Image (cartoon, rainbow, N blue to C red; front, side):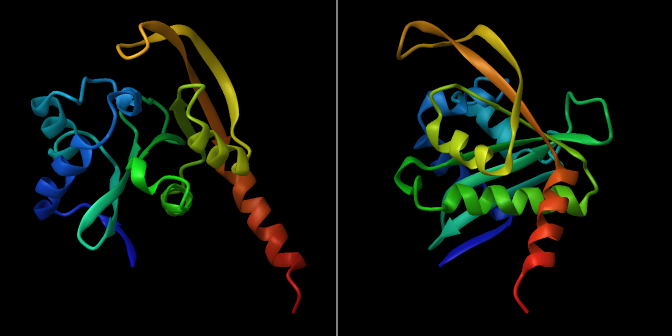
Length: 179
């Protein structure tokens, strides 16, 4: 059974194993080279690194997804960023959608209005998730990312969503729900 919960101190080993299975290209949303073990430990395992919330999706004590809410580098109280990674073997099974929905709920609980995401244009699974909610690209940083595996520059897309729209959608569905 899939369990989503906040990261606990004892999850460090499970997280290290999880990130060792993630392709380097998928970690591009992080500003550091988290593929280096020191960076990974600093970024994902250190409580002092500014994450408002770090959630794990576990299946039989195996981390299959990690999602975070970040306010670092965002200077407005009404905005934060979601970063989400799902282990390749568990993609297209609803894990990412479930985790993303849980993170949006946490945004709602924290009264954060603007949700920001960053992604590469070939990340089809993530694009499907954010399209369901109506995220709109705000900017495209042309030739911003250089992936070693492809030896070519790729764009980085930054998109956002106003959480008030999500609340209105929820209220609408609640209103039209058959009684």
